[in-house]
Image (cartoon, rainbow, N blue to C red; front, side):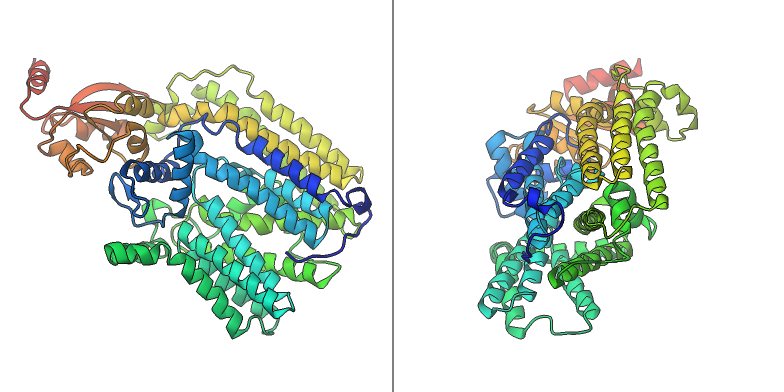
Length: 573
């Protein structure tokens, strides 16, 4: 990326140590992101959905077509599933393998932002940017998940950064090389999630072009190189898939992208300010510092100023684009984590350089919000243990029933919030004593540690409330000569029941056939208690096996067999 000479009052201490700092950060990222990946079952919907697609890819031995429940899955291209399937081939079909790709991506992301930051400014800035990424809530947690977006975002950001490098390079041959690399990166991003990668980079380029008053941004030849490389990579899948199976995938895939932009897909709607709130609260503590970088984008050299401008442009493009899109999830604005953490590092860098100060209103607001976060983390386990305090205020019968599940809490979990509060207090004290680098290290380091411990201690307990019973039921019947399905939208039933591609009726993906059709082997179902009235209808002939903690479990036998008749006679008596 754009190189600049080291400078600033703290730089001599770090000069010549970039490689060692980079290695230390890579090891730190691995330490935070990899341990505990398999401690929690996969969550619905996205984690289980993508992991099931990768599992079926291995089961079928077909690495070209993506399926869910062995039916064509047209919503996503296969790059992420290829990576996840390779991890499953290496580590086994489990939660660790499903999340390992993003853990590795997290380590790579820390290395990328440090490298770019240290070349753009110096090692201190690179360290600040890396710490902001590692120690902010959602950016950290995404690397411990099994969703596509961390890989997708890194590829888009790399492509945008390489294109920026090309724009600022005078030599024609070098510029063409950087545009080619940028095109390859965007092409891979397209293979990971789709054409929104190209949409984002084109919109960012257009807005950036406006901000530089329509100066020449790219030549026709360079644009041709960029788009040709993007198309060449995308054709690895889209072209081969079309040649092998016709245009079905392309048509359904495009239709799905239109649906995402124009409707509340799967009920994922939200107000227009949804992503602003997500980024502000979810990127704490980096978001507080980033807010103050929008008003002044300083830099000692032109490349620093231009890159800062590009990061602001990227932030607004992502925020506005996905605020307009009807479907809204936390995942969609995650590309903005790069500019948010960069702008946070920029503000702290200027504080270290003596060009900015931490004003009293900023200090007070940061302290108040940090206190609120600590109070939430402290009180959460206390309220869960004493759930009778909140149950009267919950109107969702299913949620109340889930909370009745007996989950062991030691009673000391609240200490995590207390410890985090003490660490934040020390960090704020260091800021007050004009030691911003130490304060930033304490603030982001303690946040990263808090998130790590939260996922290790809290997440397994929370997951038991939401899906512990059903997953145990699916696993108990995995590998058996039976059908196992959830009667609500879910993918964990597919992943944990481990159904193979062969030996099943081709209609077994159809829940209506499983409930009412001439099934050829027993079918087991999980329903929410809010569905029990319909499921208990005698016309279905389902045998209720158990009901506990928000879920009801049923069996349907092969019509006319002995067990079916026995159960019906017992029910009649």
